[in-house]
Image 1 (cartoon, one colour):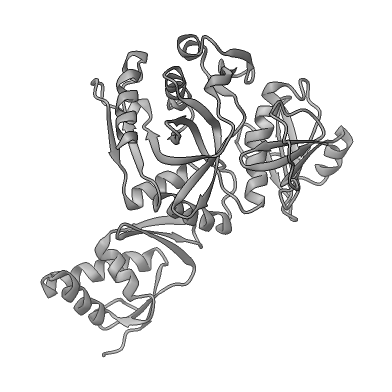
Image 2 (tube, rainbow over the protein chains, first blue to last red):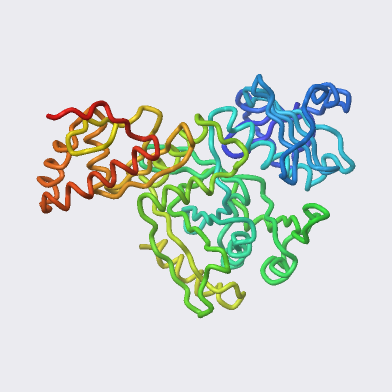
Length: 310
Length: 97
């Protein structure tokens, strides 16, 4: 078993997760193993036919264990306590894209089973503090983050953000040093980076490895969250603005920005509410509006950095 | 039982709330719907965590927010009606005080 440090957790894995290895491994929070096709056949033998309309298959068994699959792209089984993830072989198993789904999508279910939460966020480090960008897929989180990287910021995580709370601080834990970008954003802002693979056959998003100087591998205190409005909700004008969200609207925005929307048990919803309260009692949440044009990102950068320094 | 100024009401137990900057979000654990409460609604919510007559709630809100009693009573009954419709409140009794 190899040991890796990810999201502030020690992870043991049978195969290379393409992460820095953990030199002083603690007891693993999660163990990742391969499993044979026969295992998944047995697991699914009594499952009812897929009925939901999601793009992926999600089955939660009576003991709390979970099965996830998406066409030929991935197949995972998560133990009821979240401490083990079993990976099924797929056509390109253990590729960068497969590992990306494992370390975000599958791991988010394991975190929930362990009583933890995560945000759907892209986070950069700027001046020793982290800034998180929230928003739906396609809202522009990664593109905005890549602009910050070009200005000297460093990537903390893209997609899944796990935080812990220390006194009055929210600590952001680093994720895989990859960023998912549309090719035009990658060409504009990440020319010195390594493009690895397409995420899946249904998107043009690429998985990009930023340069070593654009990555951070240690915990960073989170100073603010910015929620990126969907482009269609933004006026046609050129205005760039950020307003602080308060109380109920902020709470609901954080809850809506938690990473995993599939699990809606009362226990999970109660925890989400507590989690949102913890975050918002310590750091501000801003709504960020700007036209989705590359030439507007400079103004967004100036605004965010200005607020960050105050 | 109909809700009136003489009703005794209490918040149901199947919910959790999170307060922030004088407002709150309540999660109804039965239908898993979130509800937002502003400052005055939060004050009323705090008063019905234990059984209370509506007139008691009205009088306390009049005292806290320095508002006119008649319009306050109407607003309190309106909010309590919404909470009842959302299964966040139950009427304990409707007897005269």
